[in-house]
Amino acid sequence: MGVIAVVGSPGTGKKTVARALASRMRLDYLDLNEVAIGKGAAVGREGGEYIISTSRLRKILLPIIKGRRLILSGHLLPSVLKREDAELAILLRCAPEVLEVRLAARGYSEAKIRENVAAEVLGVVAAEAIKVFGVDKVSEHDTTNRSVEETVDEIIEVLQGEAPLNRPSIDWLSVVAEKCLLQKYFP
Image (tube, rainbow, N blue to C red):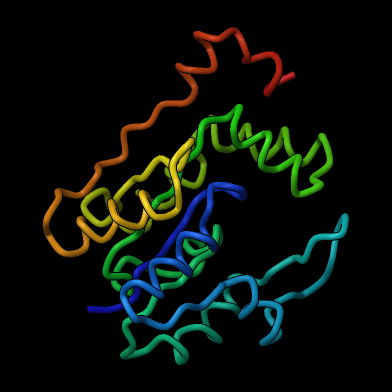
């Protein structure tokens, strides 16, 4: 047993779900962004956002997680961890139109909303997670219009072997194309 990595595009519910999952499972929780900023992996700022050295962050993170079973969240996890570092990767997804509302509520700029929604439509974090952890270690969970509790219940069933791994299958690109929203997210 080891690290359960919670990954997904910004706004999919990583921190909220990961904290609730850690609480329910009585495990420690770490936010990768907090570790990066607090321990010196942030190497600069651009447009109000931190620039993170993923190689530096890996060197900082490995001694912290070694030998521990914990929940770790962050969209950069596929750039920091390797397959053997994680027991399982929980991939959170969210429908583009709902994600857009969530990011706007956080005060993201229109450009940042479009960038993050486009990444979710294209499955950028999903592809990175599958590439790094392998499809057999990635369980995909749709947080669209679902409560945190429903999502956590589903994840716990997978972790306890009561439900099969949710193989990555969400295709937002087809959904967006069917709704004629491609121009909106890819101007």
